[in-house]
Length: 136
Image (cartoon, rainbow, N blue to C red; front, side, top):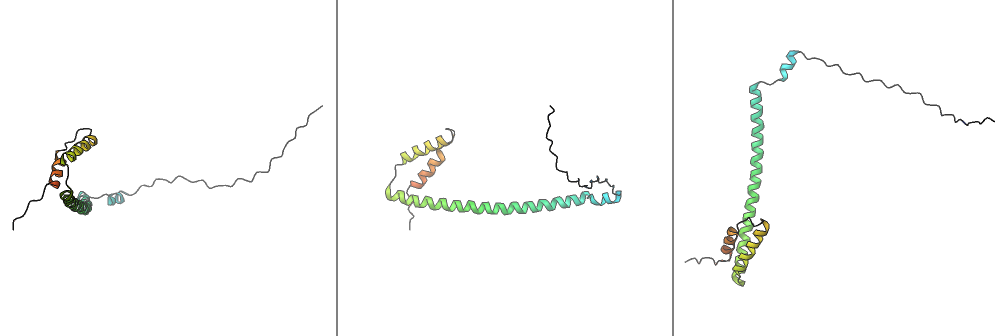
């Protein structure tokens, strides 16, 4: 007995669209005169480089002005904080030995014991020391 295989008919394929093939663009040579016109002379290059450097120096100058303003602002804040703290210390008192020990510990922890706490200790002493009396 012969077995019959069912054969499915495939749907008819849509005809392939013809896509125009891209042709490789041929390299065209420019006349020697055209090439020379795009090359800058050494004097022109120097002028362009000086112009670029001048622009960069101007930008650097503006950046430095902003940084100086920020530094001045930080200095004003530090001075104000030191003076307020000096008044608080004068009114309440302070244990300078304990402050110095805390400064040493903080700098040692933050620098793997490589930092020198002397400057910070001197600054703390300057803040807590009484202000000199002015003679009238």
